[in-house]
Length: 290
Picture 1 (cartoon, one colour):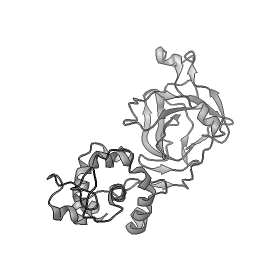
Picture 2 (tube, one colour):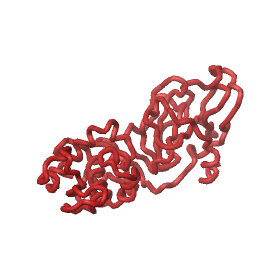
Picture 3 (cartoon, one colour):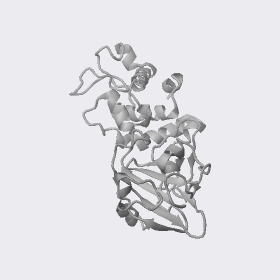
Picture 4 (cartoon, helix red, strand yellow):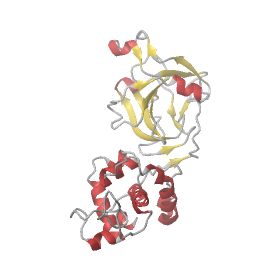
């Protein structure tokens, strides 16, 4: 943790380092390797191939950690990767998911040793960047996106609504729509999410937010909010029910409503989705929201 801090890296990197070292050596500076790497040594089981310094470096906790973090910094976009994948791209384990099982234990260690900054690491293992917040109790709950909302349009083929931009894309509805009864509603996070993009009067979607579920299984877009109403910022981790903004009519719309889209997994660039949307209906029915 000190080695990461000395390099100016955030708590998120410290957490990854502890997670990696548990997975490699159970946090012991061991003087032996294994069948796959008989020359592996130290906290991170670094090989004698010249990439990790001398034997003394590999057996020194601070030096070996520093070399791990320098390699992590060379991984393009490591901050946005699933932690086990970021670690795998440094360590090259045979199983890319090997480190997942050690995330919760690493989280508790970082919390215990890291003081106030590390206390923002939540039980799911999410560690926001410096300056961001964890808002609410991340308990894995699901809630309606607006208290008095009704589902006004489903997922799938449909004619382009009168008054909206036409074209091929307009003949398929890539999400579901909600409208609040009795006036503009407060839009809330439907489950625990990390905010990865805030849109402000941006194109077809208008104002809104994109979040990734803290379990990494979904990316959720919530759009057409009232301009200037977004209450969260990119990097925040928010619990289900946290207010995100106000229902509006920005973007390509005929009236006030919320448009919600689901994508499987995490999107490398939330502004340019490469994953196709998925039908939210079965998921929302399972969670008792529809």
